[in-house]
Length: 362
Image 1 (tube, rainbow, N blue to C red):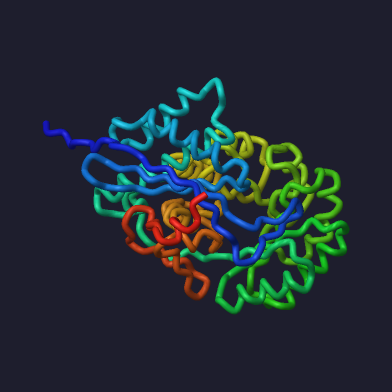
Image 2 (image 1 turned 60 degrees about the vertical axis):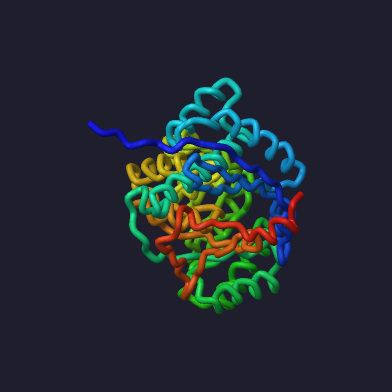
């Protein structure tokens, strides 16, 4: 019986960049003015390259994350190009330390690059490698913690581009201010557009129940992370007492935390972050959990790769679109008439704009 030869990992290139944002993205806990990213390139002995992105949120974590990623990459250099096997190997190696924080981020960035390289080895996309087919995915855009007038202005801009929804940051000092933002946005975008709101973990469960009742009649698609991300019981309490669906998931580390949230009935909808959930390997395991429990899932950031993963997920709901990293991506994801156009791209669809990368190296 013949055996297929598995390509070997020849080496990696790890680079840190700081990508400025056209407009600061404000949240209840502060403003995001740039994207500190670690770019992961893996090379095989067959001359194929794969790419992954790590978002460190804070520039202070950029250098340590890049150095840690280099150390972890050295551990798998020379191994067969087998992303799931390598992911499970990292999980065993770091069982005592734990697969959260910078370790999980570095592992996920490597995992993304490995899947990209594997798909390119077979001259296909990550989506087709996973057995899926391209399809349009409805997308929404983000509105920051910008106050009543500016939030409406940004939301209207997304509406004019044809997006199917907007997600707005709220959590103002009073419930009346939250309500004013939501109602002003509704007036600006019309009745057909989905509106989601995100509290960025800024409330206690008791306060959330009291405050969110005022939003129950506003036709919101979901209310996201009203309380601390890992307060599963707190979110379950809010979900029981509020009619509007509760959305959680972008801050869960790996499928095991997602399983804990499901067991606690912490939210109606879930939105894994492809980095924090464990790369492509972690996403597909999380998507299987969502399917088994009939839970709609959306993504958090990573639009190019996430669009493909959404197409491979049985309970796909909304694609979160952000253009924050477009300056360093050679061909950013296209969204037309509010639908992300997932094409039969090479690998994850991510190639670098090397001129921009060179200018933005940290």
